[in-house]
Image 1: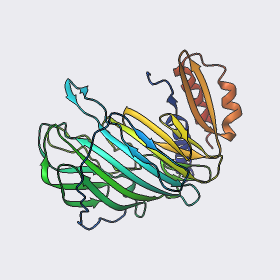
Image 2: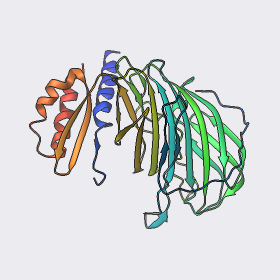
Image 3: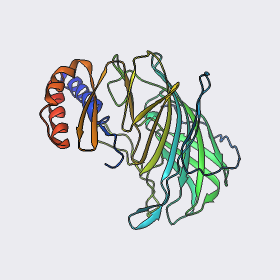
Image 4: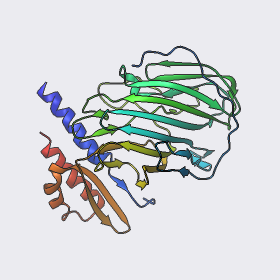
Length: 321
């Protein structure tokens, strides 16, 4: 048991530094639900950039997601899926409310009669609470089924190859008390693999979905674009760490990352930020305050980004109790 606890603590410590080390220079179970779709049919309009609207009221801001131009992937021209979130985190109550919009492009050579999403937080009972799914644009929902981590969306009309579909998903997260990647401890709240996403769809007509494993990684991600408006309710001295630049904006934060695998966050009032510049690139890492002095002394040593990373990571491994 002691060995298992040490492994969990090591994983959290590594995640705090590794997952949230990022480049600021852009170059570098809820039980299965009833099969009852909620359908909304409205027109959609593609926009070239993310547009934020904020105010000082208690109402959540609105967000129009960014849709990436065509990318050449594996010798083929494909469009990236676009995810946008308006996310409200209650740090004290350990609850998260999410309004998520997804534009999914059918980059396969097949018309798709159904879509499948992976819902990692639904692997544990009571964490993920689905409130609604709405589809806008050219098709309508026929049926939906949430079974464990798999959300199946059946369409009245197949999604043609090269075309897109827009989904709006609203849900809540009741974060568990755990030292894992999704949950909270006395020192932090971690949001990793916290939202429904589309896995790769292969030319063998298979969605790349694996069931959760106790050992090793089981999730497969497509490259995608992410725009997040984050509202945090809690102490004023909270620090948000992410795998992208966090930009304060009045009563919220904006996080955008493009051509990436996912978007992850960690929130704490006990973080310190380590920073080291290499040429035009600034590398930042987030650690807990009790690690500040020893790691800060190490910062004078590394002269390359890789050595900076190796030095700080080695320190974390040595100091995990």
